[in-house]
Structure formats: structure tokens, C-alpha cells
Image 1 (cartoon, rainbow, N blue to C red):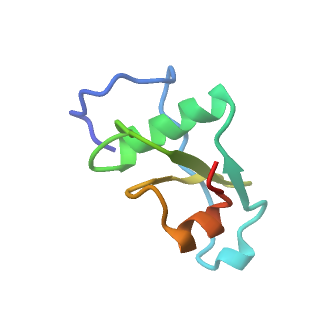
Image 2 (image 1 turned 120 degrees about the vertical axis):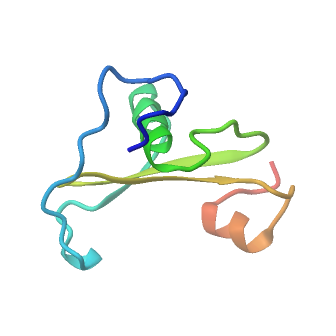
Length: 100
């Protein structure tokens, strides 16, 4: 965690570190990919970005989509896709974006 990060906190305390995570993804209990749509998930996503990403939580411009990776061990990761170009066929197909 970065102690000197000037970004404001979005939760009253940091997201707890996951505990007891095994090294093989197939053995991780309760592994789940969460599309960030709810405010509670957004706050967790922002906290994880503030703590883990060298550039913090943003700002993001243009089209974007955010995910949390959760498990029975706790939140493992937060990641995002942002559109560096209006269309990138392989990425758009994988994410599920259409022209609209």
C-alpha cells in the first residue's frame, strides 16, 4: 500500500487483504468476476486502484468498463478496460461492446 498517496479515500478503511489464497486459479474458492455497476462495488474498485495502481483510480475518459475479482478469500483484483480507440474489434467482441 502507498502511504503517501494524496487521493481521497472512498471507504472508511482499506479493503481487507485476501487471506489463504492458493496459487492455482482453479483451486481458488468462490472465484467470481464482478461487473462494477453498484456504488458499493465502485467504492471497493476505487480503493483497490488507489492502493495498488501506480496511477491511482483515474481519471478515465471515454468508454470504459470496470471489474472486481472476488473470492471466498476476499477481493483479489480490480481492473478496467478503457477505449484507447473508438473501435478495437477483438477487445470489443471479448467485452461485449457493440457499435451503440
